[in-house]
Amino acid sequence: MEIYDSAKRPSPFIDEFLQLLRYRSLVAELVARDIKTRYKRSVLGVAWTLLNPLATMLVMAFVFQTLFQRTVEHYSVYLLSALLVWQFFSTTTTHAMNQLVWGGALLHRIYLPKSVFAVSAVGTGLVNLLISLIPLGVVMALTGAPLRPAVLLLPLAVLLLAMFSLGLGLLLSTLAVYFVDVLNMYVIVLTMWMYLTPIFYPADILPASFQWVLKVNPMYYLVEIFRSPVHAGVGAPLAAWVAAALVAAGSLIVGWWAFTKQADEYAYRV
Image (cartoon, rainbow, N blue to C red; front, side, top):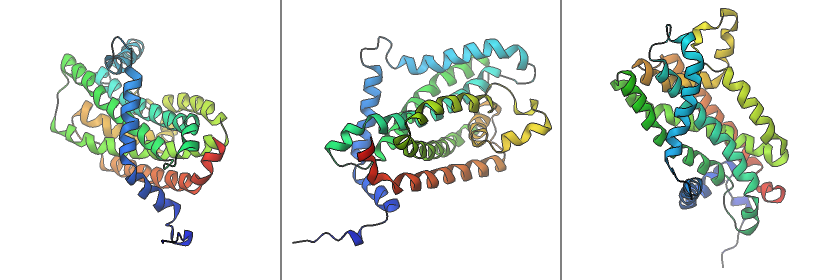
């Protein structure tokens, strides 16, 4: 008979990752469930994923294009490419919190690694982002924006974006388990954060005295490394890639550490 020795159990940081690998099929099932639930009984179905960024772009372009069309070429592409990044980030991090907080009943019934909720939220976001690239391609074709080889950098940009979003989603999920108000507060933070990120305006319109706001904003770098290959047709500056890689890795490590450190308590608190 094999005797369980808790002293031989890996650290929570490693053990959660190993358990996540074992339950990878569950992650796939949760992603499929989220996609099916979202479009169940929907007349337009997956078309909503295409229409949402387009509708937002049209409204914002109508408001801001007269201000920036002379300084930003192909403004619609400039705006939509950044909106896709922002919608992925905001939706994924919010969904990660909701999944853990409202999925607590499942934790009481069976054992599963708690990180599956955040990882499946990122997986669902990636599927939606992939679909959302279709309207981006349509807008590029209609506006005459050239498609250049630099777009081959997009998978790396998406990887860093997913790492950052997962790390922050895990950290926020940890806080939301103890303080449910974090869910409501985060919505307010997201609104302010969006306007501090150059999504619908060019970064160079900010006075020199306010440029530091961009330098401390991780989403600025993640937006730039995704938008530059699409809009400008060239890769973002190396400094932007380095900064994006650092904030993505830092977010994932800190978020994973904070989440796994308290993971054993979640079933009792949600």
